[in-house]
Image (cartoon, rainbow, N blue to C red; front, side, top):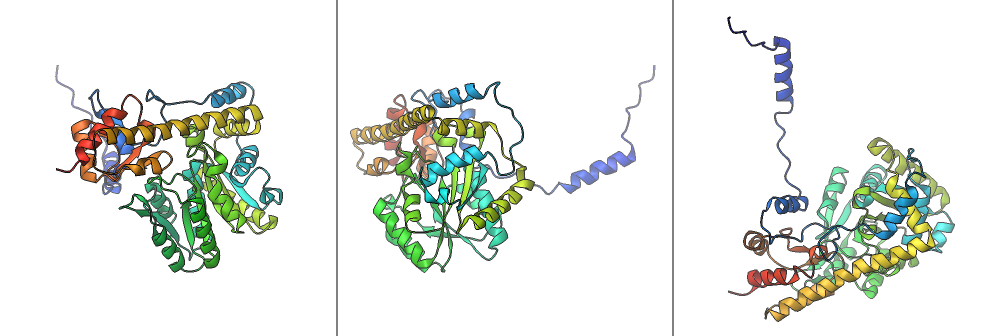
Length: 421
């Protein structure tokens, strides 16, 4: 029996395939995200000694992800009792109300006077992106000043919104602290009415925050120059363990009569990383202006994602509106912050016990999820290649990945790669 000839695709199909191939043939693979790429490399490493201190997600002292008890209880109340209908374009009204109280204060006159335009956002990233698009649409000639360094995605967000960027001095490498004089000079030299991105607390990646007195000086100079402050507040409660203390910078600016913008996230302080729960708020001159601004924020959101997800919004609303659950959350968020603070102390003490001639005071002077270690990219490469320790090449250590079980190993490896030859 003669072999059957293989069926060949018709000429038209071949032409379509060729056209499709050439249409996207010029597309190159995107570079790996510098933060998420760390986790990929960690997961691919078969070593039993490997340690991941790269990604900013909280872990307990056994290195395991955590779901807070207040979140579990909120989800128990949601299950089978609440529907999953679309939210309005602006999101959950209840979640927004509770978020504003958390950021602006329980008894804020700005809330009572309805001067705040606010919408639910896709966590802090989404809140920043909504504001960046709003800035581009209604202040097309403006630019944004971003601190050096900052969370790398800040640059991506304002770039993709096509808002011109400038950077301003923030971190002082030699002291591994704040370059306050450099910061103040740049604020003074920026054109009047400039937009500045500020980290409300637990600056990412450095963990370096201005003192309360420094914040007051910054606010005063902003007032003189008529600058607009946009606060990214990703760590309220998670930084110090006290949400009121972590909102102090915002409260200072409010006391001084500024109009502000604020991005809030519940990823870190409630552990709702995958729920993408956040809020964007803009303090306006009066209620009428707030209504107009909110309507425009909703219009920007509509073609982006139509409306925000409901589950995380329900969790946040239930926790913050129930006194018992809110009390439990405050206890749990303080527990997370205290563990991070304890690991900072333990890492510093271990390095000192090893006889490191370097000063490691900055480990405990900094605050929040990250420690900006001061290690060079070459030293970080040695940590990875020789000790299977993974972090971003700028030397940022996620303290959430440090545990009582690995802090000695981590300290020894850091000592080995940083000690003078």
